[in-house]
Image 1: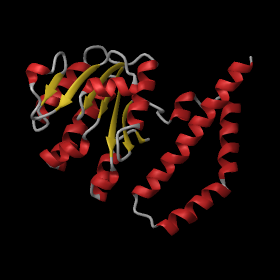
Image 2: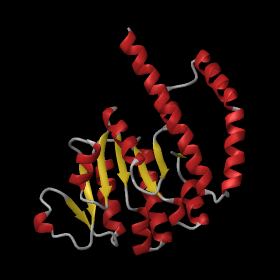
Image 3: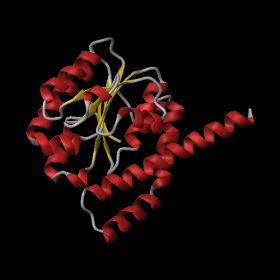
Image 4: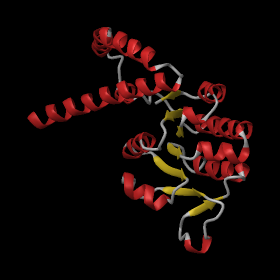
Length: 226
């Protein structure tokens, strides 16, 4: 049907555009100059037909999947390199629509985030040191300086049934309060549990707000970067 072809085309276009812009973000985060970025972009553009041919071969062999197109190819933890948490919530919503249980850990009020990105009913933890708990309603509030308690809450959610999707916004905030080493150990603990429980952890991380070596250490233990 025409509507099916249109939808397929638009989904492919969206996936392609996301791939391109994520590639640009990754290159920019590694400190290349504008001239170097221009040269690299032109090189990628000149060879894009090879990538298309390679994907066509995979499809013919049955080796490509929709997960690869969305860049989440396996259960595990992923970094989403962006200045403001937008794309990370898009990936989170996709996992929810695929049937995953959701937990959002946010710096802004979870109700505002859920409304903006249309999550529906998900569990949430609000990272705040000053929020009035009497006015928080059903929203759980976590002290961002208590990483042990925060990790315990996330692990309890993961152990409640597997097939979970956890999104974390506020990485730089946690680092500023606890130090990078403590946050790295916190994420390593969560990553181990995510893998065991066959789930996902999506982390919004602005590479420009971290030291280059710190970002590399974060990325090293992840299933991938989005």
